[in-house]
Image 1 (cartoon, rainbow, N blue to C red):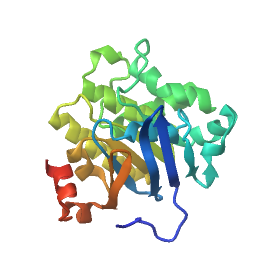
Image 2: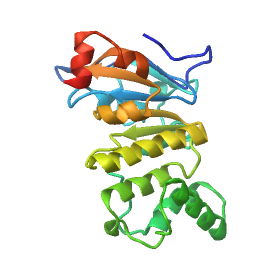
Image 3: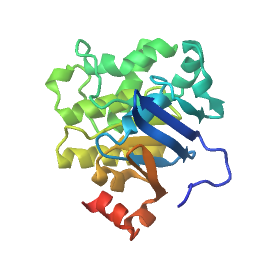
Image 4: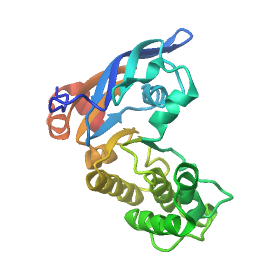
Length: 250
């Protein structure tokens, strides 16, 4: 099992995190590290606890025990939204359903975080929107509404918005859910390309093994609220453990 590190402090460190809802233990002592510039895929099926862990990482849920460090700060000790805001300005989120604003066109959707968090003027924002769309593999679609776009195009617009503030970390929540295999491959290729081009530290939460194989530097398998193993993609593929083989290939 490899931690993928090079001696540097990990960008994300999860230590002994546990979470229960009533009598149901969803996470049981999770330990995980994500290092600078890598893409770690958290792979798990429905009910494995991966969405709960993501909720803890972005501050929507509190763990019952354990702690989470992001860029050296113990975010699980935060008590106010203002503490979280400092982290959120450096973190991008790609939500499962794209989460575009239906009443805004593509330009305004991507420009929204730039207008809120930067002092760029309108021409500068428009130029950046065009550049972000090009990076996402999209043409001149600034004036289109989300309802006019396919699911794959919506996801690409959402990804362009996610990287608009040049985040150091990106969390991806089931980025290929609802997409056909060809479109899913396109999204996977885009995630990998952006990670390499921008040196983003990425955590991809998914059940999609095909996506994991396409984007991961390392894979962490989550099963019944526990980490089954974490290793490089090459080691995972060659692991002879029957549990791992069944997990990957059914």
